Image (cartoon, rainbow over all chains, first blue to last red; front, side, top):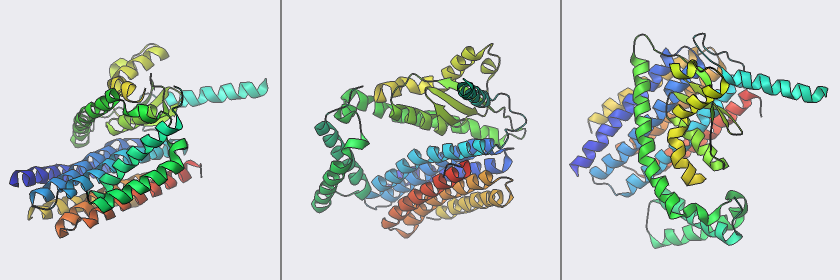
Length: 126
Length: 177
Length: 84
């Protein structure tokens, strides 16, 4: 039983460390796109560690096995919804016209949007 | 892919909803099971027509096996990529070279495209910015040389797809079609 | 159970750092990203508190909080995008 607690504690420690990393990325990165890169996903992996780790820890301390089922439910929910909110946020950033960082090397989306605009204006003129 | 029959959709929805109920309550008490089953049937009767297209075909053993094999594969990819990003955050010189690249996918179904976009977003270094038809626009934190030095557009797309979408597609192609 | 204080301290530091971005961050989307991180961290914190007090029902609170936060962030992002 104590082995389970130990594994759970280690998972929680790793998870909180990833929380810290994601907050650090939020501070250090130069523009909103890179901040999203480093922070949203580290936070997701961190919560996965913290939440599943807490479930294992609780079972190790003698609580009922229902803990692990419930914690896995919460973790799965976060795993499914966090990328969607990240995607919505980065789209909002781009649609609002926030420029890419000056060190960015390529922007295919702008080309794509320009092409689309051209095609539409041609259709109208015809 | 043609639509499944109504009965197949209904049974599929009841199974899915009941499994979700089991996870949410986390108990095997007969009373809970009974009420959960009743509610699964009610909700499935209301929603089975809009909520699913393929019905019971989604529970084909091969698909389920690939879905189960996908979980550890995906978690491993996620941990590796997170360590990579951790290195970029902690490195004093902040080694990033971001850009937005274009990828193409071979998946057809909407659910498949959604899961591919989610998988791409969760492996750090890449975020899906927009999906248009079978084209993915992806913000990449470190665009490698081979993609950057591509001669024309099609080569760029091919090399980027090789790096980003290919590893997940071989699983998702079987799971979602 | 002594270890749990260390984890709570790490979580507190992470939340403080994201609060800095909420106040500082030049654009609205920056602030929203920081808030999104804070809600994710808070969900983990609530699950930890469930263990701290030894009550399983608190995990359901974390689940409902995650659902509401997700809806809020999506609605706000759509609003900023101009689609609402």
